[in-house]
Every structure is written in structure tokens, then in C-alpha cells.
Image 1: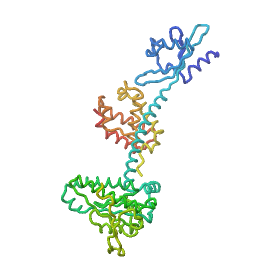
Image 2: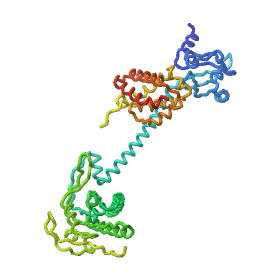
Image 3: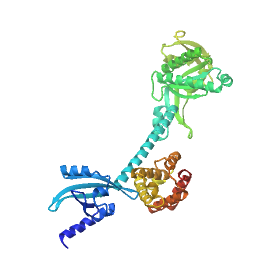
Image 4: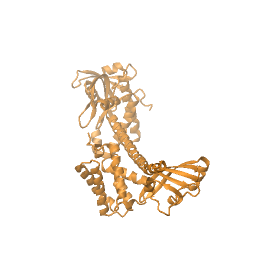
Length: 347
Length: 119
């Protein structure tokens, strides 16, 4: 077998499509088996433009004249399958005349994979966005239920270790006559107003570094000094309490429903932890919580009652009056005091 | 922890992509179903099959019923076409090493969408 014959056989057998075109009229002079297999040219498709009518033969001619080479992507529809080829045209001049060597590689699979990866990426991106949104919602919900540092601990370890915070100041607020109001008024109006008020309380508390712990019906508990120790926790809570009352005073002036509260403030220790397994609730327990509750009961409407240690910590920055000595359930007899608003009447 | 989806069980995208491409090839070769794709662009068909198979296997896709309906409503798909498609998909899955009961599960997912796909 001659070298030329071996070369031709090799050309026929390789996995790329090879064709030889006349440079003048783009007629086929040779097509290897792979090329024939891919394009299955019919006898009447004896030129490249006839085989691939959408192919830009003019551009091919211009590029070959200018650079002797041209690369393009050929789309060829075979039955219902779109085949995509990377085509490389090279102009060559032999004794017999000018020819174009066309080498094609089937890149259909690569394009299919690219389409699939595009499609998959879009799905994953959409999922990721959804997961991120859900995560943010869960985080928002949990942050509504517990301080951020407690949430971080919960997120990292899945549990929250109960912690003793000492000292902190606890503010306990309760509305006067809420039960009657809830029973007599439209419940949805009552709840909506309560929600407005609690939202305002949250904003006020936040200003002074208080952490709202929870609301139980018409009782509202907020605390200063946790999770991070705050040296002036008593002042923070006293300021918050005064603003709560000012806010309600102002609100009552323009609303048919009159909301009046009683407030108790106590300093001391509390234990903070997440309780419950199915329904996580961050809560605080301890003498300061119980005492704040009892002191609240000593308040008249729109009054703030504190005990001795809180008064001492307030450093004469507040207008404080003595409330005498009271027997407090569960505690020793206590000297109690009332914080008065020095700005009363100048709202 | 949530149950593992078939998509995850069979190796995620890298493995399922082979199933999708093979299924795509077999669909085009099928004389019963292939003609539905005569005028469909390759990229669109691949996109559709990727999402559809991922959705059947519990992968990161959520073809809603409305979306599926919208994609098939203009085609005159009969019950026998869906039967053929099920047969092709079942054979593809089995050939790619899916267990018979998992293949049955996928067929159940497909069957559940019959009313949406068949016009």
C-alpha cells in the first residue's frame, strides 16, 4: 500500500470530519467517513453552500483571502437533532489548484452539557436565594425571641447554657383595667392597639439598651444588664420606664381607649436561658423578676415603683419620693420609692 | 434530618446529568415522542429535561403544576405518548443503575403529573 493510500485510510478513519473543498466553487473533492456519517450529504449537495444553506460562504471566502484560515461553528440539523460542529477551514494551494481543508469536530455534547449546567445553575441559584430568604426569616423570628448573643450560641451549639446575670435591672409593666377593656372592646382593636404600644415600648427600650424579654398578655418585661453587663442598668431601666409613661400619656390625649400602666423596677440577679424543646422561649428567672412583679403591684396607675437598691443606684438624677415601707410577698419588708417625672406637664 | 432525595442518593448533578443526556438522546430517537421535539431548540430541550428530571427526583427544581401545564398545553399529547415516555425514562433509569423501587417511585411522580401533561 502506498503512503498516499495509507494517509487516505487514516484520514477516513479518524474521529474528526475532514473534507476537501475546491476553493473556487466550494465543491467537495473529498469527504472522510466521519464527515459523511455526520452530514450524510446527498448527491445534489455537492457543494458546501448546498449542504449547509445557512452557512455564510461570502464571509468564508473573504476571511480565507485575508488570513488563509477561518473558524466557525456549524449548526446542522439531522432529523430532529441539532448537531454543532467546530469547523476549521484552511486555504492551501497545490499544483492542481487552490483547495480548502475543512476539519470538523462534533461539539454537540459540549453544548448540551453547557445548556444543562446553565439550567442547573439557575435552579441552584434560585434555591439558594429561597434558602437565604427563609434563613433570614427564621433568624428574624428567633432574634425576636432572644438576644442576639443567645441566638448566636443557640445557632452554633444547638443549645443555650443557662447563665446567671448579676446585677441587672428588670422592668415589669402591667396595664390597669386591661381585663375589662379586653372583655368590653372589640378584641381585634384591643390587640392591635396593644401591638402598637408594645412596638413603641420596644423602640424606647432599644434606645436605652434594654432587652425586651417577653410579653404575657398585658404584662411587658424588659431588662437592662444582659446579655452584656451594663454598669448603669438601673438608670437605663428608669429612663425607659419614664418614657413608657410619657408615651402613654401622649397617646391617651388623642385616642378614645385610655391605656394606663403600673410599673415595678427591681435590681438583682436573674438566670437567662432558652426553655422548652418544641417551642423555644428565651426567659429570665430569679429574685429580680419576682421583686419587679411585686413592686409593680405597689404602683398606682401611671406610677413607677422601685426599691432601695435601685434608688441608691439612680444617683439623685431622678425625682424620687418615698413610698414608705411595704410588706412584699416572698421578700423582707422593703422601703419602696416612686420615680416621678420631673418633666411632667412639659410634654 | 430530612430524608435523602433520589437526586442526592444517585450522586447529585454529576450523576443525574448523565441520565438526563441519555434520556434526551432516547427521546429524540423515539419515533412516538421524538416528533414533538422536531422544532425544539436543543438548548431549550436540554433545559426542560434537566429541570423536569431534577424535579421528579426531588432535586433542586420546582416545576410548578402551572408551569408544566403551560409547557405542554400547546402540544397534542395523548396518554400513549406519556406511556411511551414513562417506558423510555424507566429504561434509562434502570440502565443507569437506579434500583427498581426507586424507578417505580419516579414513575409514580410522573404518573401524578399525567393530568397536567396529557392534553
